Length: 345
Image (cartoon, rainbow, N blue to C red; front, side, top):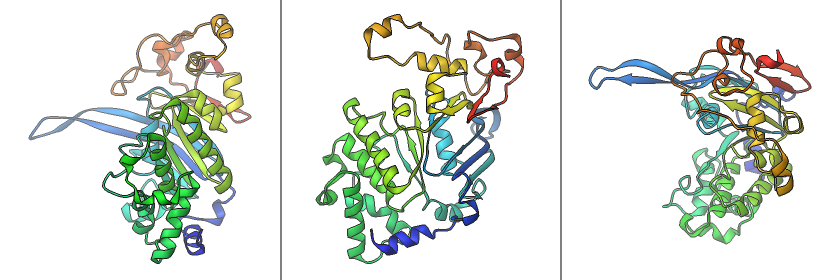
């Protein structure tokens, strides 16, 4: 890697020595609400969709925090809000010691050198009119870090090689690649500016099962080599178990449980987490046939009209009267565990 590129990224605005010992990312009471408008000429707000409603968590340097939950629970919205691709309604987003929740576009442009995203769709996230070399090198051009032509080409070739592709593929176009190869191109683009944090928004869900493990292993190899930090958003619990150090479980805009990987899979505390894990198939048919079934009844309530009290209570087999009226806070249980459930008050 050319020294000029490495040094520029390392000294990017937002890097603070005082924050070196704290979490790389801290999210505090994050809310992302979308107004529902009525009317054509004269519009008025008639309701609010609470996509993310009071989410708090931290991600340490060099770790992977898995964020899991059913479709529509607010996982991707959380990731987009952290990157400020969506404007937060309330809350704090502290990245490298700096609260970026209120940053304007100019200030966020500098911060984004240190935080990038890998998208879910490897087909829609790459411009079909650009060559692979131009796609991977575009962040360097946009942020004025391309240097001279020789160094630019060296850096692009290095990034392409880093994700397991051949440098001579730089002249080809996205339609000439498979889905797994396209996702590798997207990863190379995310690495161009030497980010500290990469938000992975279901990066393997659109890939064939045979390819998913290769891409997940690539993420882990790059993390070990480059010291990356991941917020890994997914709904596949087996993938999250493989890559994550800690896991946060999300339901209807809220975090309901946070635990280390081993804690969560060994002893899930929240009834929703228990039901999610019970739905993961076991590859041994004999064990699969003997384990008890735990099915979540009903449908996920609408974020437009979330139920009072605990949001999971309409579907929870352990719901009490208290659950229907009081919203349980996310309680710290020690040893890195937290759960939002009246059963563990």
